[in-house]
Length: 200
Image 1 (cartoon, rainbow, N blue to C red):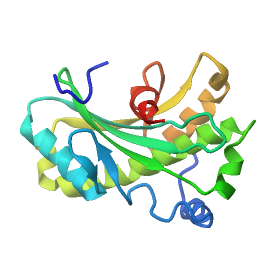
Image 2: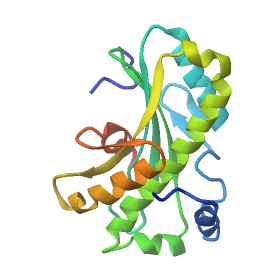
Image 3: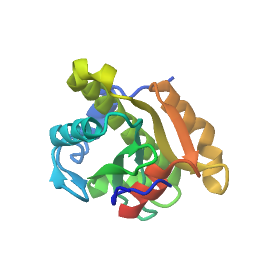
C-alpha cells in the first residue's frame, strides 16, 4: 500500500481571472509556483505532470482515478490548499498540494458571515486547476493515453447534506457540472475534506 494515501452553466472566464489579478494576490495562478509532494518535496506544475505520467506508467494494468479538491480554514485570513489526488485503485495513491494565499484587502470578502464566499472560492479554484490539469494531461499524454487506464471526471467539494453547507450543495454541484466535471460532496469528497483539510 502506498504510504502517501490509504484508500479511504458558469465557467471560469478571463474576466474573473483579471479581477483576481487586480488584488495582487493571484498573479501566479493555480498552476504557477510550487506544489508539494510528501515524497518528492516542492515541485513545479510540469514536474507534477511528469510524476503523474511516471506513476501510471509504472503500473499500467491498474485503473487510476484523478481528482481535484480544495479546502480552507474558518478564519479571518483563510488560505486555500488545493489538492491533486491520483488513486491507484486498490493500491493507494499520490497527492500534490498547492496553497493559494491572498493579500489582506482581498481576504476581507471571506471574513465573518461571508463563509459562503469562501466555499465558492474553493470551488472556483478547484475548477480552474482541474480545467488546466485536464488540458495539460490530454496534451502531454498524447499517444500514450489509450494505454493509460484512467479517468479524470470528479471535483471534490467540502460541502454536504449535513450542517450549514447543505444550503450550498445545489449551487456548488451546479458550478462543477458547468465546468465539465462531476461533483462529489461529503462524505465522498476526500480530496477536499481529508487531503486538502490536512493542510489547513
